Length: 222
Image 1 (cartoon, one colour):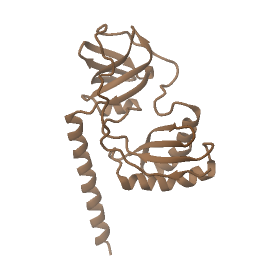
Image 2 (cartoon, helix red, strand yellow; image 1 turned 60 degrees about the vertical axis):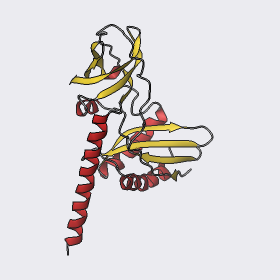
Image 3 (cartoon, helix red, strand yellow; image 1 turned 90 degrees about the vertical axis):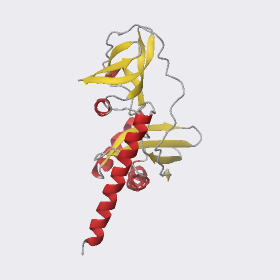
Image 4 (cartoon, one colour; image 1 turned 180 degrees about the vertical axis):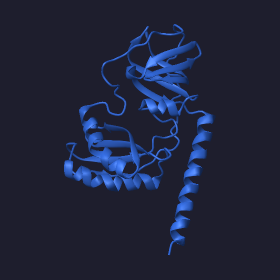
C-alpha cells in the first residue's frame, strides 16, 4: 500500500519540562555494558527494515537518517528524521526532496502493512542523539540520557557531555561525573537551552547563506 506523503520539519521542538529524574544518586555509577546495540535509531524489526531500505537512497542525496519511528494503530505514521551530511541542517525543501525520492522505494518494497502517512522531518533543536559521533559533536551541551536497565537504582541522567572516549560517555551532572557506555542507552537527546538555540540559528543562517550563494552562481552560469 503506497504511503501518503506528508513532508514536515520540526525546527524548535519544546523540551520536556521535567528534569528526567536526575535525583541525588551515587556520584559515579559503574560502567554498564550490553552485548547488543542500543535501540536508538530503530526500536523494532519493521523500523530496522525501513532504515535498511532507505539509507542508500538518502545517502545518495547527501542525507543521513537520524532515526525511524512507526506509530499508530488504525492509521499508522512513519516518521523519518534526517539531516544533511554536510552541515547537519534539514530545511523544508530538503524534507520534500527526500520524501519524493523515498516514495518509489516504499511503493516497490511495501515494508509496512496497511495504509500509513510518511512524515519526513528534521531532528529538531532538542534533537535525539543516535550515534556516538553525535555525542562528540555536541560536547559541552546539556543532555538527558536513559539507560535500558537500572544502574545502581537509576536509569535517567541529566548533565553536560564532558568527554567521549571510544564508546564511553562522561556526563558532568549536579552530583559529579558519570561514565556510561553508549551501548547501555535506550534514549538520549539534547535539552533545549539558550546556547543550543543560538548555535542552531547560526547554523540555519549559514545554510541559508550557502544556498543563496549557490543559487546566484547557477543564475550567472550561461
